[in-house]
Image (cartoon, rainbow, N blue to C red; front, side, top):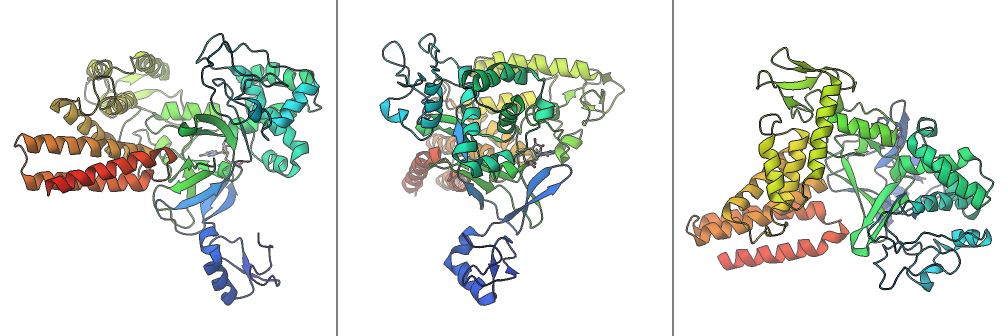
Length: 525
Ligand SMILES: C[S@@+](CC[C@H](N)C(=O)[O-])C[C@H]1O[C@@H](n2cnc3c(N)ncnc32)[C@H](O)[C@@H]1O
């Protein structure tokens, strides 16, 4: 670490600042150059934390940032189980495989299920374990009852770990406490009434800690506002974690940055699009295919704010009309909200005088969403039939239609009897069309280096190679035209690799794809 206001090279008092990150000082240009070459180039931050009345603290680009550039890599301050989860080991946090015998191995001191004796001694677990043991508390849940069930008893663990930081690592606790909580907005919500009954009782009555009810609930509120869900599929780990600097990213429904996690559970933020110096660096806390009502409701309930971004303010959702339905009267116009900032505003057809109340729109949306959730998740037929049923009422870029089309783009190529090589020509063509159409939507809602685009590009690329080969074999494509299609597919793959290369679980897939395509191109030469 460099001492502030002292030259990073010779440590004399200094006033010349690195203009990009504004974090390090130099006695003069010479030492700045030396420091840059010695490693500051890699460390130099491309953001600064600033504050305004709408967003609170947020990040702003302190220099131009290129797509794909790493903005931030940060290790977790603390992590632990999600509020409700399948049984996991409190030492290594891996989901526990279904036990061979009657029940899981249990910690000899506190009774929580674990991998075995080694994990009992994990640094994540020892302190909470000692405390629970000293209060004679033993977890009494019978995990053998039902496998695959989510267990809400875990909701007390991460808040307890945060409270224990206070004495174990006071500086970390200070960093944690500086995060936004929205406690007042959360109080008296159903979730906080449950937390008052469970978490507060556990901490104050069972563990006899001195914290006040508000202090305990504030910890839960900080977690709900700031924690990231970390998925390490290869490691079978799904936890929630706090990254204090990553928590400073503000939300925008059209974001310019996204995050992933590396093997060490560091969070890594990447620029999705070019970000000019001075621009806000933002991420999305919601789903891109959701409509404005769905996104704003989620943000208001989960993060306690009303989004006013460009997409939310526009009743046409950037000309996609994602939240609109086709007018049932004139059958042509789109019915849009008269005020997208107000969920209670009425909806009007853009072409005829037809109107609907907010309640009618909300009930209609809820019924359709319920219908989607009830579809057989592995059935191409069920999803195609849904599209057919709603072909008149819902237009092609309506949120429900987009969600179903995305599901179909995944099912073609992966569902039982629909693996990519089993697809007949029509199904293959359908998969390609779906991917192309969704890529157009991704460019509007989740463009650049997004995971959404990366996955679609990979799917499209694979289907195009198979289609080109089939068309060549049955004489529909000349050798040159086939070669051209394969090269086009190679370009899609290159873009997908750029986007997905930092995703830990993707390395093998990307390697296999590249080798496979290179082979196809060789054969065809
Ligand atoms: C993870 S924190 C981000 C850091 C926070 N602004 C702070 O000062 O600590 C999430 C909170 O930031 C605020 N926020 C983020 N994006 C916002 C947006 N687009 N509009 C309004 N508030 C936003 C909300 O209060 C939200 O609950």
